[in-house]
Image (cartoon, rainbow, N blue to C red; front, top):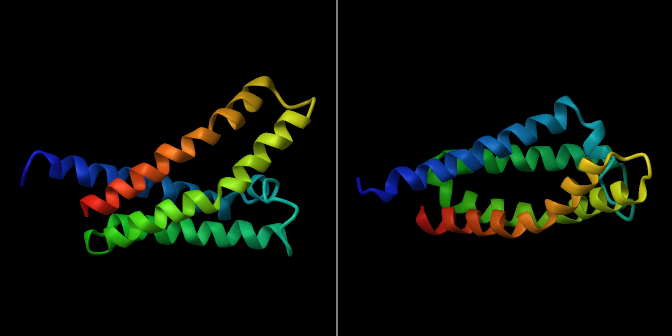
Length: 129
C-alpha cells in the first residue's frame, strides 16, 4: 500500500460521512431544507427535501464502498452541482431578510464558491478509485 492510498480512502470516507450526516438531517429536520427549495420548482418542497436526502445517503454509501467509489465520486460531483440552486436560494433569502443575522448572511454567501472545490474533490476521489 503506497503513501497515497490511506489519503485516498480518507478523502472518500470524509465525504461519505459528510453526505451521510446531511442526508440524515433531511429526514430528521426537514423544515430548513424545505425553505431553500427554489420556489420556481414545481411540486411540494418536502418532496425535493426527501429526494435530495435519499440522493445524499445513496452517494454516501457509494463513496464508502471501494467497489462503487468511482461511481460515487461522479455522483457526488453531480449532486453538488444539482443542489447549487438551493444554496443560491438560501443566500438570496438570507440577504433579503432584514431579520437574518449577519453571520448567517455571510456564511450563506461564502459557501457558494465552496461548491467548486467540493466538485473537484469528488472528481479527485473518482479518479483515484
